[in-house]
Length: 299
Ligand code: SF4
Image (tube, rainbow, N blue to C red; front, side, top):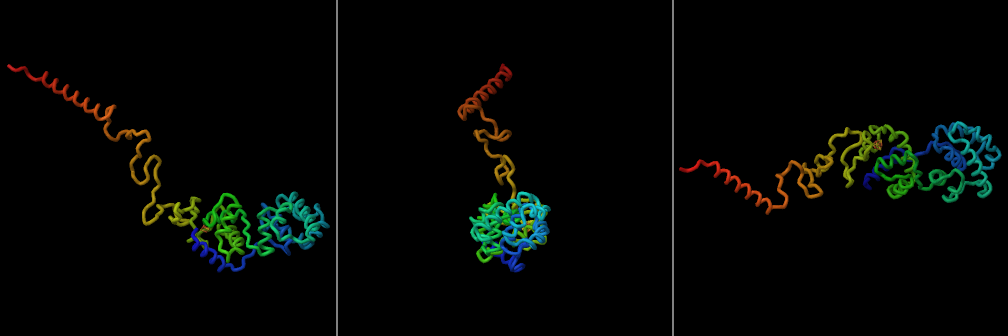
């Protein structure tokens, strides 16, 4: 995506939603951390349903330890993987209580050292709780960044690194929320709602084929949501080269071994031009002899 388009894309997101917020409910950095740990492979809605009652009782690591693992499990049993999540939350609460005086560390390495906390969770906490311009690449951001061509990559880390380079500094703080909400409600996985999309004219993705309608040189050759008609570039119809045909020529390419294509030019005798001339001379001589033999005898 071109720089000017990226600038335009975020300017539109910012104009529509100047201060976007995530949908996970929390009270302080600790409850945010717990909520994000619980949200792995679960919906924010499902997590909120379980944590409303939990956070009314527990908003510090010490209180979580007092509650205990069994009671925590009962609170979060509607969330997938709740057994291992409960274990991790108790263990991370022990570390926070023992090493950090019950506070959540503001340092990435310290966060990632906590049980159940990976790079994505650390990025969310750093961004939301501590105002750092991090971008946590989840499934929505991964999809949106690749479709838009904003930051292409095969892994979340590759996309995160590409986003760090691509997103203008002025928009870095909120980029995480804009992209995640866009992916969750508009640029959905199966049927992106391109007709309602704020940035449709900037997007090279073809919702019908799943392909990026962008030529290798970056020129736009079609629009998302349009039928797969002949895509145009530079005012010309772009044609796909057929297998075995030279692009745009309509003729078969010469064979690799130097042979002429079958059915093409006349077959030449083996041995080259000299041998051919000898054969032709022999044929002419034979024709002459035959003609003389057939001629009526002179009186
Ligand atoms: S135009 Fe469609 S594919 Fe492109 S960002 Fe918008 S919703 Fe996603």
